[in-house]
Length: 184
Image (cartoon, rainbow, N blue to C red):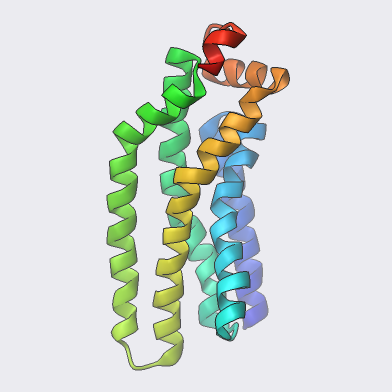
Protein backbone atom coordinates (compact mmCIF):
# COMPACT_ATOMS: atom_id res chain seq x y z
CA UNK A 1 0.00 0.00 0.00
CA UNK A 2 2.85 2.41 0.81
CA UNK A 3 4.31 1.79 -2.67
CA UNK A 4 1.04 2.86 -4.30
CA UNK A 5 0.93 6.03 -2.19
CA UNK A 6 4.52 6.89 -3.10
CA UNK A 7 3.79 6.31 -6.79
CA UNK A 8 0.67 8.46 -6.54
CA UNK A 9 2.68 11.26 -4.90
CA UNK A 10 5.28 11.04 -7.65
CA UNK A 11 2.61 11.18 -10.36
CA UNK A 12 0.94 14.11 -8.57
CA UNK A 13 4.28 15.92 -8.45
CA UNK A 14 4.92 15.41 -12.16
CA UNK A 15 1.41 16.44 -13.19
CA UNK A 16 1.47 19.52 -10.94
CA UNK A 17 4.91 20.51 -12.24
CA UNK A 18 3.66 20.31 -15.84
CA UNK A 19 0.57 22.33 -14.91
CA UNK A 20 2.70 24.97 -13.18
CA UNK A 21 4.86 25.28 -16.30
CA UNK A 22 1.75 25.76 -18.45
CA UNK A 23 0.02 28.14 -16.01
CA UNK A 24 3.12 30.24 -15.41
CA UNK A 25 4.01 30.25 -19.08
CA UNK A 26 7.71 29.44 -18.80
CA UNK A 27 9.51 26.14 -18.35
CA UNK A 28 12.37 27.64 -16.33
CA UNK A 29 10.22 29.79 -14.06
CA UNK A 30 7.68 26.97 -13.72
CA UNK A 31 10.44 24.64 -12.52
CA UNK A 32 11.77 27.39 -10.24
CA UNK A 33 8.31 27.79 -8.73
CA UNK A 34 8.27 24.11 -7.81
CA UNK A 35 11.20 24.64 -5.42
CA UNK A 36 8.88 26.68 -3.20
CA UNK A 37 6.29 23.89 -3.42
CA UNK A 38 8.58 20.92 -2.78
CA UNK A 39 10.66 22.56 -0.05
CA UNK A 40 7.94 22.37 2.66
CA UNK A 41 7.20 18.74 1.86
CA UNK A 42 10.87 17.81 2.13
CA UNK A 43 11.17 19.76 5.39
CA UNK A 44 8.11 18.08 6.92
CA UNK A 45 8.64 14.52 5.72
CA UNK A 46 12.40 14.60 6.15
CA UNK A 47 13.37 16.96 8.94
CA UNK A 48 10.30 17.42 11.15
CA UNK A 49 9.28 13.76 11.12
CA UNK A 50 12.89 12.64 11.52
CA UNK A 51 13.62 14.84 14.53
CA UNK A 52 10.32 14.09 16.25
CA UNK A 53 10.46 10.35 15.58
CA UNK A 54 7.12 10.21 13.75
CA UNK A 55 7.02 7.06 11.65
CA UNK A 56 6.36 7.09 7.94
CA UNK A 57 3.11 5.28 7.16
CA UNK A 58 0.33 5.42 4.58
CA UNK A 59 -1.28 8.47 6.20
CA UNK A 60 1.94 10.48 6.50
CA UNK A 61 2.93 9.56 2.94
CA UNK A 62 -0.32 11.11 1.68
CA UNK A 63 0.77 14.46 3.09
CA UNK A 64 3.11 15.06 0.17
CA UNK A 65 0.50 14.81 -2.58
CA UNK A 66 -2.22 16.60 -0.65
CA UNK A 67 -0.01 19.44 0.58
CA UNK A 68 1.50 19.89 -2.87
CA UNK A 69 -1.94 20.17 -4.42
CA UNK A 70 -2.95 22.80 -1.87
CA UNK A 71 0.35 24.70 -1.75
CA UNK A 72 0.50 25.38 -5.48
CA UNK A 73 -2.54 27.64 -5.14
CA UNK A 74 -0.58 30.27 -3.21
CA UNK A 75 2.41 29.84 -5.50
CA UNK A 76 0.27 30.42 -8.57
CA UNK A 77 -1.14 33.59 -6.98
CA UNK A 78 2.37 34.80 -6.17
CA UNK A 79 3.89 34.13 -9.60
CA UNK A 80 0.86 35.40 -11.52
CA UNK A 81 0.83 38.70 -9.63
CA UNK A 82 4.61 38.96 -9.67
CA UNK A 83 4.57 38.54 -13.44
CA UNK A 84 2.02 41.33 -13.85
CA UNK A 85 3.81 43.76 -11.54
CA UNK A 86 7.27 42.98 -12.86
CA UNK A 87 5.93 43.56 -16.36
CA UNK A 88 4.51 46.89 -15.21
CA UNK A 89 7.60 48.15 -13.33
CA UNK A 90 10.57 46.00 -14.35
CA UNK A 91 11.64 46.09 -10.69
CA UNK A 92 11.76 42.88 -8.63
CA UNK A 93 11.39 44.46 -5.20
CA UNK A 94 8.49 46.64 -6.26
CA UNK A 95 6.83 43.67 -7.97
CA UNK A 96 7.19 41.57 -4.80
CA UNK A 97 5.87 44.40 -2.64
CA UNK A 98 2.80 44.94 -4.82
CA UNK A 99 2.24 41.18 -5.05
CA UNK A 100 2.16 40.91 -1.26
CA UNK A 101 -0.12 43.95 -0.96
CA UNK A 102 -2.65 42.45 -3.37
CA UNK A 103 -2.38 38.65 -3.17
CA UNK A 104 -0.49 38.27 0.10
CA UNK A 105 -3.52 38.72 2.32
CA UNK A 106 -5.53 36.10 0.41
CA UNK A 107 -2.55 33.72 0.53
CA UNK A 108 -2.30 34.18 4.29
CA UNK A 109 -5.99 33.72 5.08
CA UNK A 110 -6.58 30.75 2.80
CA UNK A 111 -3.58 29.01 4.33
CA UNK A 112 -4.79 29.75 7.87
CA UNK A 113 -8.24 28.34 7.06
CA UNK A 114 -6.72 25.18 5.54
CA UNK A 115 -4.35 24.72 8.49
CA UNK A 116 -7.21 25.11 10.97
CA UNK A 117 -9.22 22.56 9.01
CA UNK A 118 -6.42 20.01 9.00
CA UNK A 119 -5.62 20.63 12.65
CA UNK A 120 -9.17 19.58 13.50
CA UNK A 121 -7.98 16.05 12.69
CA UNK A 122 -5.87 16.33 15.85
CA UNK A 123 -9.06 15.95 17.87
CA UNK A 124 -9.33 12.37 16.63
CA UNK A 125 -8.37 9.45 18.80
CA UNK A 126 -6.36 7.53 16.18
CA UNK A 127 -2.68 8.40 16.20
CA UNK A 128 -2.21 8.21 12.44
CA UNK A 129 -5.13 10.62 11.85
CA UNK A 130 -3.72 12.98 14.50
CA UNK A 131 -0.30 13.06 12.81
CA UNK A 132 -1.86 13.39 9.35
CA UNK A 133 -3.71 16.55 10.41
CA UNK A 134 -0.80 17.96 12.39
CA UNK A 135 1.80 17.39 9.69
CA UNK A 136 -0.38 18.54 6.79
CA UNK A 137 -1.06 21.80 8.66
CA UNK A 138 2.64 22.22 9.43
CA UNK A 139 3.50 21.56 5.78
CA UNK A 140 1.04 24.23 4.63
CA UNK A 141 2.59 26.73 7.05
CA UNK A 142 6.04 25.91 5.64
CA UNK A 143 4.59 26.32 2.13
CA UNK A 144 3.29 29.79 2.97
CA UNK A 145 6.67 30.73 4.45
CA UNK A 146 8.33 29.46 1.27
CA UNK A 147 5.98 31.56 -0.87
CA UNK A 148 6.61 34.64 1.28
CA UNK A 149 10.40 34.24 1.60
CA UNK A 150 11.84 31.67 -0.79
CA UNK A 151 9.91 32.52 -3.99
CA UNK A 152 10.75 36.27 -3.89
CA UNK A 153 14.39 35.51 -3.05
CA UNK A 154 14.64 33.05 -5.95
CA UNK A 155 13.16 35.60 -8.35
CA UNK A 156 15.55 38.28 -7.08
CA UNK A 157 18.54 35.99 -7.57
CA UNK A 158 17.36 34.71 -10.94
CA UNK A 159 16.71 38.17 -12.34
CA UNK A 160 20.07 39.55 -11.14
CA UNK A 161 21.88 37.83 -13.98
CA UNK A 162 21.75 39.21 -17.51
CA UNK A 163 20.23 35.96 -18.78
CA UNK A 164 17.69 35.86 -15.95
CA UNK A 165 16.60 39.46 -16.58
CA UNK A 166 16.21 38.71 -20.28
CA UNK A 167 14.16 35.61 -19.48
CA UNK A 168 11.95 37.54 -17.04
CA UNK A 169 11.40 40.36 -19.52
CA UNK A 170 10.30 37.86 -22.20
CA UNK A 171 8.11 36.07 -19.64
CA UNK A 172 6.42 39.31 -18.59
CA UNK A 173 6.36 40.92 -22.05
CA UNK A 174 7.79 44.03 -20.46
CA UNK A 175 10.05 46.70 -21.85
CA UNK A 176 13.71 46.13 -20.87
CA UNK A 177 14.73 48.35 -17.99
CA UNK A 178 18.21 49.78 -17.55
CA UNK A 179 20.38 48.15 -14.87
CA UNK A 180 20.27 51.13 -12.49
CA UNK A 181 16.47 51.37 -12.47
CA UNK A 182 16.09 47.63 -12.07
CA UNK A 183 18.35 47.50 -9.05
CA UNK A 184 16.48 50.21 -7.17
